[in-house]
Length: 462
Image 1 (cartoon, rainbow, N blue to C red):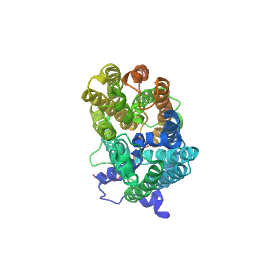
Image 2: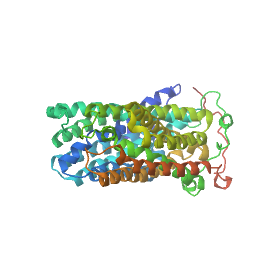
Image 3: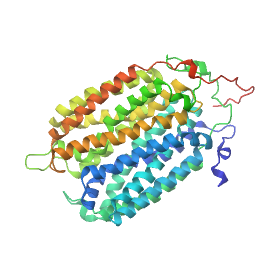
Protein backbone atom coordinates (compact mmCIF):
# COMPACT_ATOMS: atom_id res chain seq x y z
CA UNK A 1 0.00 0.00 0.00
CA UNK A 2 3.04 2.28 -0.36
CA UNK A 3 1.37 4.01 -3.32
CA UNK A 4 -0.94 5.70 -0.77
CA UNK A 5 1.94 7.54 0.92
CA UNK A 6 2.27 11.26 0.35
CA UNK A 7 5.78 10.80 -1.06
CA UNK A 8 4.35 8.76 -3.95
CA UNK A 9 1.81 11.42 -4.90
CA UNK A 10 4.18 14.37 -5.45
CA UNK A 11 3.70 15.82 -8.94
CA UNK A 12 6.54 15.62 -11.46
CA UNK A 13 7.87 18.76 -13.23
CA UNK A 14 5.47 19.94 -15.90
CA UNK A 15 2.37 18.50 -14.23
CA UNK A 16 -0.82 20.37 -15.20
CA UNK A 17 -2.49 21.66 -12.04
CA UNK A 18 -5.89 21.74 -13.80
CA UNK A 19 -6.00 17.93 -13.49
CA UNK A 20 -6.40 18.28 -9.71
CA UNK A 21 -9.99 19.62 -9.57
CA UNK A 22 -11.43 16.60 -11.49
CA UNK A 23 -9.67 14.23 -9.06
CA UNK A 24 -11.14 16.10 -6.10
CA UNK A 25 -14.51 16.25 -7.84
CA UNK A 26 -14.58 12.46 -8.11
CA UNK A 27 -14.72 12.14 -4.33
CA UNK A 28 -17.10 15.03 -3.70
CA UNK A 29 -19.64 13.85 -6.28
CA UNK A 30 -19.83 10.52 -4.46
CA UNK A 31 -20.15 11.77 -0.89
CA UNK A 32 -22.62 14.42 -2.09
CA UNK A 33 -25.19 11.59 -2.17
CA UNK A 34 -25.94 12.66 1.40
CA UNK A 35 -28.12 15.42 -0.04
CA UNK A 36 -30.36 12.89 -1.83
CA UNK A 37 -31.57 11.08 1.30
CA UNK A 38 -35.02 12.67 1.01
CA UNK A 39 -35.66 10.50 -2.08
CA UNK A 40 -36.05 7.38 0.08
CA UNK A 41 -36.90 9.03 3.40
CA UNK A 42 -40.63 8.26 3.17
CA UNK A 43 -39.84 4.64 2.24
CA UNK A 44 -37.75 4.23 5.40
CA UNK A 45 -40.48 5.84 7.53
CA UNK A 46 -42.92 3.20 6.26
CA UNK A 47 -40.43 0.31 6.39
CA UNK A 48 -39.43 0.90 10.01
CA UNK A 49 -42.77 2.30 11.19
CA UNK A 50 -40.85 5.31 12.46
CA UNK A 51 -41.47 9.06 12.62
CA UNK A 52 -39.91 11.69 10.38
CA UNK A 53 -37.68 12.74 13.26
CA UNK A 54 -36.42 9.18 13.87
CA UNK A 55 -35.50 8.72 10.20
CA UNK A 56 -34.10 12.26 10.02
CA UNK A 57 -31.64 11.25 12.77
CA UNK A 58 -29.81 9.09 10.20
CA UNK A 59 -28.88 12.17 8.20
CA UNK A 60 -28.12 14.17 11.33
CA UNK A 61 -25.75 11.52 12.69
CA UNK A 62 -23.92 11.43 9.35
CA UNK A 63 -23.43 15.20 9.37
CA UNK A 64 -22.33 15.16 13.03
CA UNK A 65 -19.73 12.52 12.22
CA UNK A 66 -18.68 14.49 9.15
CA UNK A 67 -17.76 17.49 11.27
CA UNK A 68 -16.22 15.49 14.10
CA UNK A 69 -14.11 13.29 11.84
CA UNK A 70 -12.99 16.32 9.83
CA UNK A 71 -11.96 18.09 13.04
CA UNK A 72 -10.16 15.08 14.53
CA UNK A 73 -8.55 13.88 11.30
CA UNK A 74 -7.74 17.26 9.75
CA UNK A 75 -4.10 17.28 10.89
CA UNK A 76 -3.71 13.61 9.87
CA UNK A 77 -5.01 14.44 6.38
CA UNK A 78 -2.59 17.37 6.02
CA UNK A 79 0.32 15.19 7.16
CA UNK A 80 -0.43 12.07 5.12
CA UNK A 81 -1.69 13.72 1.96
CA UNK A 82 -4.89 13.54 -0.08
CA UNK A 83 -4.32 10.12 -1.71
CA UNK A 84 -4.33 8.14 1.52
CA UNK A 85 -7.18 10.27 2.86
CA UNK A 86 -9.32 9.66 -0.24
CA UNK A 87 -8.72 5.90 -0.01
CA UNK A 88 -9.71 5.81 3.66
CA UNK A 89 -12.78 7.93 2.88
CA UNK A 90 -13.82 5.46 0.15
CA UNK A 91 -13.55 2.51 2.54
CA UNK A 92 -15.67 4.19 5.22
CA UNK A 93 -18.25 5.64 2.80
CA UNK A 94 -18.85 2.35 0.98
CA UNK A 95 -18.71 0.43 4.26
CA UNK A 96 -21.39 2.67 5.69
CA UNK A 97 -23.76 1.77 2.86
CA UNK A 98 -23.09 -1.96 3.39
CA UNK A 99 -23.81 -1.82 7.13
CA UNK A 100 -26.83 0.41 6.49
CA UNK A 101 -28.18 -2.11 3.98
CA UNK A 102 -27.84 -4.85 6.58
CA UNK A 103 -29.88 -2.73 8.98
CA UNK A 104 -32.63 -2.23 6.40
CA UNK A 105 -32.84 -5.92 5.48
CA UNK A 106 -32.99 -6.97 9.15
CA UNK A 107 -35.26 -4.05 10.17
CA UNK A 108 -32.69 -2.88 12.73
CA UNK A 109 -32.80 0.92 12.62
CA UNK A 110 -29.80 1.21 14.94
CA UNK A 111 -27.69 -0.52 12.29
CA UNK A 112 -28.66 2.17 9.77
CA UNK A 113 -27.63 4.79 12.33
CA UNK A 114 -24.30 2.97 12.77
CA UNK A 115 -23.73 2.28 9.07
CA UNK A 116 -24.83 5.29 7.08
CA UNK A 117 -24.69 7.63 10.09
CA UNK A 118 -21.48 6.81 11.98
CA UNK A 119 -19.30 4.81 9.57
CA UNK A 120 -20.49 6.62 6.43
CA UNK A 121 -20.28 9.95 8.27
CA UNK A 122 -16.59 9.37 8.99
CA UNK A 123 -16.09 8.77 5.27
CA UNK A 124 -17.95 12.00 4.58
CA UNK A 125 -15.68 14.04 6.82
CA UNK A 126 -12.38 12.64 5.62
CA UNK A 127 -13.48 12.74 1.99
CA UNK A 128 -14.72 16.30 2.26
CA UNK A 129 -11.50 17.83 3.56
CA UNK A 130 -9.02 15.51 1.80
CA UNK A 131 -8.49 17.68 -1.33
CA UNK A 132 -9.06 21.16 0.15
CA UNK A 133 -5.58 22.11 1.35
CA UNK A 134 -4.09 20.52 -1.79
CA UNK A 135 -6.30 22.64 -4.03
CA UNK A 136 -5.39 25.83 -2.19
CA UNK A 137 -1.69 25.01 -2.56
CA UNK A 138 -2.10 24.37 -6.29
CA UNK A 139 -4.16 27.55 -6.76
CA UNK A 140 -2.79 30.19 -4.35
CA UNK A 141 -3.74 32.84 -6.92
CA UNK A 142 -7.42 31.75 -7.11
CA UNK A 143 -8.33 29.87 -3.91
CA UNK A 144 -12.06 30.59 -4.15
CA UNK A 145 -12.26 29.30 -7.69
CA UNK A 146 -10.21 26.21 -6.86
CA UNK A 147 -12.17 25.11 -3.81
CA UNK A 148 -15.41 25.98 -5.58
CA UNK A 149 -14.58 23.65 -8.47
CA UNK A 150 -14.20 20.68 -6.12
CA UNK A 151 -16.68 21.42 -3.37
CA UNK A 152 -19.39 22.06 -5.95
CA UNK A 153 -19.26 18.29 -6.42
CA UNK A 154 -20.60 17.75 -2.92
CA UNK A 155 -23.53 19.99 -3.71
CA UNK A 156 -24.01 18.38 -7.11
CA UNK A 157 -23.84 14.83 -5.82
CA UNK A 158 -27.60 14.71 -5.44
CA UNK A 159 -27.99 15.75 -9.06
CA UNK A 160 -26.65 12.32 -9.94
CA UNK A 161 -27.81 10.37 -6.89
CA UNK A 162 -31.43 11.57 -6.94
CA UNK A 163 -32.45 10.38 -10.44
CA UNK A 164 -30.15 7.35 -10.12
CA UNK A 165 -31.76 6.37 -6.82
CA UNK A 166 -35.26 6.91 -8.20
CA UNK A 167 -34.49 4.73 -11.24
CA UNK A 168 -32.91 1.98 -9.13
CA UNK A 169 -35.78 1.98 -6.64
CA UNK A 170 -38.21 1.57 -9.55
CA UNK A 171 -36.09 -1.24 -10.97
CA UNK A 172 -35.90 -3.06 -7.63
CA UNK A 173 -39.59 -2.41 -6.82
CA UNK A 174 -41.62 -1.73 -10.02
CA UNK A 175 -44.79 -1.16 -7.98
CA UNK A 176 -43.23 1.99 -6.48
CA UNK A 177 -43.66 3.82 -9.79
CA UNK A 178 -47.44 3.95 -9.34
CA UNK A 179 -48.92 7.32 -8.26
CA UNK A 180 -48.80 7.66 -4.47
CA UNK A 181 -46.79 4.44 -4.05
CA UNK A 182 -43.73 4.17 -1.81
CA UNK A 183 -40.73 1.94 -2.47
CA UNK A 184 -40.26 -1.09 -0.24
CA UNK A 185 -37.53 -1.30 2.35
CA UNK A 186 -35.93 -4.17 0.46
CA UNK A 187 -35.61 -1.91 -2.60
CA UNK A 188 -33.84 0.74 -0.49
CA UNK A 189 -31.51 -1.97 0.84
CA UNK A 190 -30.61 -3.04 -2.70
CA UNK A 191 -30.08 0.62 -3.57
CA UNK A 192 -27.56 0.91 -0.73
CA UNK A 193 -25.63 -2.14 -1.96
CA UNK A 194 -25.47 -0.75 -5.49
CA UNK A 195 -24.32 2.69 -4.38
CA UNK A 196 -21.60 1.12 -2.20
CA UNK A 197 -20.02 -0.59 -5.21
CA UNK A 198 -20.35 2.36 -7.61
CA UNK A 199 -19.06 5.00 -5.20
CA UNK A 200 -16.13 2.90 -3.99
CA UNK A 201 -14.86 2.44 -7.55
CA UNK A 202 -15.23 6.10 -8.48
CA UNK A 203 -13.59 7.38 -5.30
CA UNK A 204 -10.61 5.12 -5.96
CA UNK A 205 -10.25 6.83 -9.33
CA UNK A 206 -9.91 10.16 -7.51
CA UNK A 207 -7.35 8.71 -5.10
CA UNK A 208 -5.24 7.28 -7.95
CA UNK A 209 -5.12 10.57 -9.87
CA UNK A 210 -4.63 13.19 -7.10
CA UNK A 211 -1.20 14.85 -6.81
CA UNK A 212 0.43 17.28 -4.36
CA UNK A 213 2.74 20.10 -5.50
CA UNK A 214 6.49 19.67 -4.90
CA UNK A 215 8.06 21.75 -2.10
CA UNK A 216 8.48 25.39 -3.05
CA UNK A 217 6.21 25.17 -6.10
CA UNK A 218 4.22 28.24 -7.18
CA UNK A 219 2.41 29.25 -10.39
CA UNK A 220 4.60 31.05 -12.90
CA UNK A 221 4.89 34.73 -12.05
CA UNK A 222 2.92 34.38 -8.83
CA UNK A 223 3.66 36.93 -6.11
CA UNK A 224 2.00 36.19 -2.72
CA UNK A 225 1.76 39.93 -2.03
CA UNK A 226 -0.37 40.38 -5.15
CA UNK A 227 -3.37 38.55 -3.63
CA UNK A 228 -3.55 40.86 -0.64
CA UNK A 229 -6.17 43.11 -2.20
CA UNK A 230 -8.58 42.92 0.74
CA UNK A 231 -8.07 43.92 4.35
CA UNK A 232 -8.63 40.42 5.76
CA UNK A 233 -6.11 38.63 3.53
CA UNK A 234 -2.86 37.82 5.31
CA UNK A 235 0.49 36.56 3.98
CA UNK A 236 1.30 35.16 7.44
CA UNK A 237 0.38 31.72 8.82
CA UNK A 238 -1.49 30.55 11.91
CA UNK A 239 -1.45 26.96 13.18
CA UNK A 240 -4.67 25.04 13.75
CA UNK A 241 -4.02 25.01 17.50
CA UNK A 242 -3.75 28.80 17.58
CA UNK A 243 -6.56 29.43 15.08
CA UNK A 244 -9.20 28.05 17.45
CA UNK A 245 -8.01 30.51 20.08
CA UNK A 246 -8.97 33.49 17.92
CA UNK A 247 -12.34 35.25 17.92
CA UNK A 248 -12.22 35.27 14.10
CA UNK A 249 -12.46 31.48 13.99
CA UNK A 250 -15.52 31.38 16.26
CA UNK A 251 -17.25 34.28 14.52
CA UNK A 252 -16.83 32.48 11.19
CA UNK A 253 -17.96 29.26 12.90
CA UNK A 254 -21.15 31.04 13.99
CA UNK A 255 -21.76 32.52 10.53
CA UNK A 256 -21.30 29.13 8.87
CA UNK A 257 -23.46 27.37 11.46
CA UNK A 258 -26.34 29.78 10.90
CA UNK A 259 -26.09 29.59 7.11
CA UNK A 260 -25.93 25.80 7.14
CA UNK A 261 -28.72 25.32 9.66
CA UNK A 262 -31.05 27.38 7.51
CA UNK A 263 -30.25 25.53 4.30
CA UNK A 264 -29.98 22.01 5.63
CA UNK A 265 -33.54 22.05 6.97
CA UNK A 266 -34.86 22.51 3.43
CA UNK A 267 -32.51 20.02 1.80
CA UNK A 268 -33.29 17.24 4.25
CA UNK A 269 -37.05 17.72 3.71
CA UNK A 270 -36.99 18.86 0.06
CA UNK A 271 -39.11 16.22 -1.69
CA UNK A 272 -42.03 16.16 0.80
CA UNK A 273 -41.81 19.93 1.34
CA UNK A 274 -42.72 20.96 -2.21
CA UNK A 275 -45.63 18.52 -2.16
CA UNK A 276 -46.90 19.86 1.17
CA UNK A 277 -46.69 23.49 0.03
CA UNK A 278 -49.16 22.76 -2.76
CA UNK A 279 -51.49 20.32 -1.02
CA UNK A 280 -55.18 20.74 -1.79
CA UNK A 281 -58.07 20.66 0.72
CA UNK A 282 -58.81 17.06 -0.30
CA UNK A 283 -55.31 16.06 0.83
CA UNK A 284 -53.87 15.56 -2.65
CA UNK A 285 -50.85 17.54 -3.78
CA UNK A 286 -50.54 19.33 -7.09
CA UNK A 287 -46.92 18.15 -7.17
CA UNK A 288 -46.41 14.47 -8.02
CA UNK A 289 -43.75 12.36 -6.29
CA UNK A 290 -41.74 12.16 -9.51
CA UNK A 291 -41.77 15.96 -9.80
CA UNK A 292 -40.72 16.24 -6.16
CA UNK A 293 -37.76 13.99 -6.93
CA UNK A 294 -36.89 16.29 -9.81
CA UNK A 295 -37.07 19.25 -7.43
CA UNK A 296 -34.40 17.57 -5.29
CA UNK A 297 -32.22 17.36 -8.39
CA UNK A 298 -32.90 21.02 -9.22
CA UNK A 299 -31.84 22.07 -5.72
CA UNK A 300 -28.70 20.06 -6.27
CA UNK A 301 -27.99 22.22 -9.34
CA UNK A 302 -28.47 25.34 -7.20
CA UNK A 303 -26.24 23.91 -4.49
CA UNK A 304 -23.57 23.00 -7.02
CA UNK A 305 -23.77 26.23 -9.02
CA UNK A 306 -23.63 28.33 -5.84
CA UNK A 307 -20.53 26.52 -4.62
CA UNK A 308 -18.71 27.39 -7.82
CA UNK A 309 -20.14 30.77 -8.88
CA UNK A 310 -20.34 32.47 -5.47
CA UNK A 311 -16.95 31.14 -4.34
CA UNK A 312 -15.31 32.36 -7.56
CA UNK A 313 -17.03 35.73 -7.09
CA UNK A 314 -15.52 35.96 -3.61
CA UNK A 315 -12.06 36.11 -5.21
CA UNK A 316 -13.16 39.48 -6.63
CA UNK A 317 -15.33 41.07 -3.94
CA UNK A 318 -13.86 39.40 -0.83
CA UNK A 319 -15.13 36.63 1.47
CA UNK A 320 -16.67 38.93 4.07
CA UNK A 321 -18.86 40.73 1.53
CA UNK A 322 -19.81 37.39 0.03
CA UNK A 323 -20.98 36.10 3.41
CA UNK A 324 -22.99 39.29 3.90
CA UNK A 325 -24.82 38.33 0.72
CA UNK A 326 -25.41 34.75 1.83
CA UNK A 327 -26.81 35.68 5.23
CA UNK A 328 -28.57 38.96 4.39
CA UNK A 329 -30.02 37.74 1.13
CA UNK A 330 -31.01 34.47 2.75
CA UNK A 331 -32.96 36.32 5.44
CA UNK A 332 -35.09 38.09 2.82
CA UNK A 333 -35.64 34.94 0.78
CA UNK A 334 -36.73 32.87 3.79
CA UNK A 335 -39.32 35.50 4.65
CA UNK A 336 -40.61 35.42 1.07
CA UNK A 337 -40.68 31.61 1.12
CA UNK A 338 -42.62 31.55 4.39
CA UNK A 339 -45.32 34.01 3.34
CA UNK A 340 -45.46 33.84 -0.46
CA UNK A 341 -43.89 30.50 -1.40
CA UNK A 342 -47.27 28.74 -1.56
CA UNK A 343 -48.75 31.17 -4.10
CA UNK A 344 -47.01 29.68 -7.15
CA UNK A 345 -44.74 26.73 -7.74
CA UNK A 346 -42.39 28.89 -9.84
CA UNK A 347 -41.88 31.30 -6.92
CA UNK A 348 -41.36 28.45 -4.47
CA UNK A 349 -38.75 26.84 -6.72
CA UNK A 350 -37.00 30.18 -7.36
CA UNK A 351 -36.77 31.09 -3.67
CA UNK A 352 -35.54 27.62 -2.69
CA UNK A 353 -33.04 27.51 -5.57
CA UNK A 354 -31.33 30.78 -4.60
CA UNK A 355 -31.40 29.92 -0.88
CA UNK A 356 -29.64 26.63 -1.56
CA UNK A 357 -27.12 28.36 -3.83
CA UNK A 358 -26.23 30.59 -0.85
CA UNK A 359 -26.04 27.51 1.36
CA UNK A 360 -23.60 25.83 -1.04
CA UNK A 361 -21.61 29.01 -1.56
CA UNK A 362 -21.06 29.32 2.17
CA UNK A 363 -19.29 25.96 2.20
CA UNK A 364 -17.03 26.54 -0.79
CA UNK A 365 -16.10 30.07 0.29
CA UNK A 366 -15.17 28.94 3.81
CA UNK A 367 -11.77 27.35 2.97
CA UNK A 368 -10.71 30.50 1.08
CA UNK A 369 -12.00 32.65 3.98
CA UNK A 370 -9.84 30.58 6.34
CA UNK A 371 -6.89 30.89 4.00
CA UNK A 372 -7.33 34.69 4.02
CA UNK A 373 -7.47 34.84 7.80
CA UNK A 374 -4.96 32.14 8.81
CA UNK A 375 -2.70 31.46 5.80
CA UNK A 376 -2.00 28.12 4.08
CA UNK A 377 0.20 26.37 6.66
CA UNK A 378 -2.53 24.23 8.27
CA UNK A 379 -5.61 25.41 6.42
CA UNK A 380 -6.84 21.81 5.95
CA UNK A 381 -6.74 21.13 9.68
CA UNK A 382 -8.38 24.48 10.46
CA UNK A 383 -11.07 23.73 7.88
CA UNK A 384 -11.70 20.39 9.56
CA UNK A 385 -12.26 22.10 12.89
CA UNK A 386 -14.55 24.69 11.30
CA UNK A 387 -16.75 21.90 9.95
CA UNK A 388 -17.91 21.13 13.49
CA UNK A 389 -20.31 23.99 12.71
CA UNK A 390 -21.77 21.69 10.06
CA UNK A 391 -22.07 18.91 12.66
CA UNK A 392 -24.04 21.17 14.96
CA UNK A 393 -26.19 22.44 12.09
CA UNK A 394 -26.79 18.87 10.92
CA UNK A 395 -28.52 18.23 14.23
CA UNK A 396 -30.24 21.58 14.75
CA UNK A 397 -31.55 22.16 11.20
CA UNK A 398 -33.41 18.85 10.65
CA UNK A 399 -34.44 18.77 14.33
CA UNK A 400 -36.16 22.16 14.02
CA UNK A 401 -37.96 21.26 10.82
CA UNK A 402 -38.91 17.68 11.77
CA UNK A 403 -39.98 18.61 15.31
CA UNK A 404 -42.16 21.46 14.01
CA UNK A 405 -43.73 19.23 11.36
CA UNK A 406 -44.31 16.33 13.76
CA UNK A 407 -46.15 18.78 16.02
CA UNK A 408 -48.20 20.17 13.12
CA UNK A 409 -49.66 16.91 11.82
CA UNK A 410 -49.13 13.67 9.92
CA UNK A 411 -46.63 13.32 7.08
CA UNK A 412 -48.46 13.34 3.77
CA UNK A 413 -51.19 15.64 5.07
CA UNK A 414 -49.20 18.77 5.94
CA UNK A 415 -49.64 22.15 4.23
CA UNK A 416 -47.52 25.27 3.70
CA UNK A 417 -48.73 26.81 6.97
CA UNK A 418 -47.13 23.96 8.91
CA UNK A 419 -43.69 25.10 7.73
CA UNK A 420 -43.95 28.78 8.72
CA UNK A 421 -42.74 28.43 12.34
CA UNK A 422 -39.63 26.55 11.20
CA UNK A 423 -38.86 29.02 8.42
CA UNK A 424 -39.15 31.99 10.79
CA UNK A 425 -36.72 30.32 13.17
CA UNK A 426 -34.29 30.09 10.25
CA UNK A 427 -34.73 33.83 9.61
CA UNK A 428 -33.68 34.59 13.19
CA UNK A 429 -30.60 32.37 12.85
CA UNK A 430 -29.54 34.08 9.63
CA UNK A 431 -29.69 37.48 11.33
CA UNK A 432 -27.39 36.19 14.07
CA UNK A 433 -24.97 34.87 11.43
CA UNK A 434 -25.03 38.19 9.57
CA UNK A 435 -23.99 40.05 12.73
CA UNK A 436 -21.21 37.52 13.48
CA UNK A 437 -19.74 37.96 10.01
CA UNK A 438 -19.80 41.76 10.34
CA UNK A 439 -17.64 41.48 13.47
CA UNK A 440 -14.77 39.61 11.75
CA UNK A 441 -11.51 41.58 11.67
CA UNK A 442 -7.89 40.63 10.73
CA UNK A 443 -6.21 38.14 13.07
CA UNK A 444 -3.98 39.61 15.75
CA UNK A 445 -0.29 39.22 14.72
CA UNK A 446 0.46 37.58 18.07
CA UNK A 447 -1.08 34.38 16.66
CA UNK A 448 1.13 34.38 13.53
CA UNK A 449 3.92 31.85 13.08
CA UNK A 450 7.47 33.21 12.61
CA UNK A 451 8.05 33.78 8.90
CA UNK A 452 10.59 31.66 7.06
CA UNK A 453 12.59 32.78 4.01
CA UNK A 454 11.62 31.16 0.72
CA UNK A 455 14.15 28.54 -0.35
CA UNK A 456 16.48 29.66 -3.10
CA UNK A 457 15.72 28.23 -6.52
CA UNK A 458 12.13 27.29 -5.66
CA UNK A 459 10.57 25.76 -8.73
CA UNK A 460 8.02 27.84 -10.64
CA UNK A 461 5.71 26.42 -13.27
CA UNK A 462 2.13 26.74 -14.49
